[in-house]
Image (cartoon, rainbow, N blue to C red):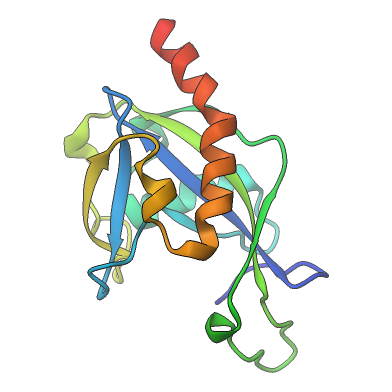
Length: 168
């Protein structure tokens, strides 16, 4: 696990919710694990803003560039979850142990059309091997248990922005 780990041991990270034209959201299956589905996410690199990380991760994980999406909003605060002990890796060298993630969540509208999504375009080691559109609230009950609270808070906070965009 790379990226910035804060003084409390949380890795700074962005979460990405991509809404399609019918307000369903992108749901990706992690490579090599048929039961591990999640939203795109990734850590901030040193000196990188959350928005810069958003667009880097969006390209690396989903193959999209800024012209393919419109940012509808971002969570007001960083949302935090702790990793269960069995998922914590021992720190190497001078690195601090990561005990979980502190995330800024972004809600995007796909503007480039579904054909713009290419899971292999942005990386030699894709994060996802397949994806599908799901109902907006579906991920809350389907994501790994320790991320459910953060998913629920992010989706709840950002949902009004999706409705505003629909009526615009």
